[in-house]
Image (cartoon, rainbow, N blue to C red):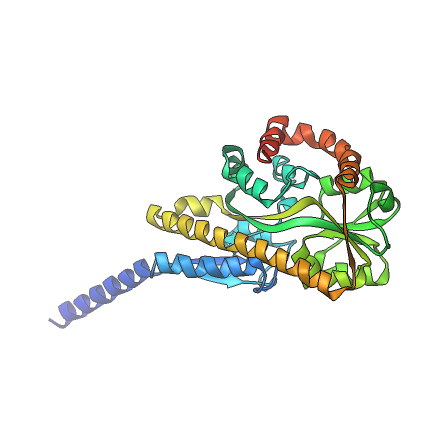
Length: 329
């Protein structure tokens, strides 16, 4: 009898343990490199809130901002190794996985964020989310940072000739490097965290960025002029490990897709509103002058950068560029 009781107890414990193990939520680590107060940071927190609400007890989302787990250089490797499940790198970081995403770095391709939205919501934009599946990467959403402006430590930045010979900080992107070469300027690849000091000490003369990045990083305090060019954009792609994603239960995947769609709308509106507000704050601060450009001025910048499109069209694909252009209509 004692043996039977012991066996029953062991069986009950094993069953309880198995039941507990089965009920364990899927842990999703979302790692990113910016502060929580940014649109990306807020988007990640909104995704956590929505995912856990839609899938109570089934998922647990852990958000790690400000490179707490991995920095720019290591986060992609961590994702592919399964150490994190979600990251949101800049689109400029993907050119070693696919040349097609270089379309987003082409200068003067999109006239505004609304055009970017239309392209990303279309068939060609959606297809790009799966462009890196063979490399183990699944795209879930595009998140905005905003349209880029050009700044310098000079009094004037009205036409391309004003940029000649100046040193501009860029992200590590072949397209962006070619963009500044086309202006007869000197592009300098540099980590985002090093830009303020480089501008302050004159290591570089200028940079390109969104209004929100310029304000939050105080670049306007160490630059004299910001030309309102809207010549490009900074975008992120929220990505996951394709193998991990495919193994998720269908109901969990569906819930996460819904949460991501809602978090994306939230983060993108926040990014737009923040850029509008920070542009005004920069103007009110009066430390850097905002130079508005005429249509004739902008036409000169566009013409100067035309060779960049021709250089990268073979890798990106002419049809993809045309699809992006149609989004402006």
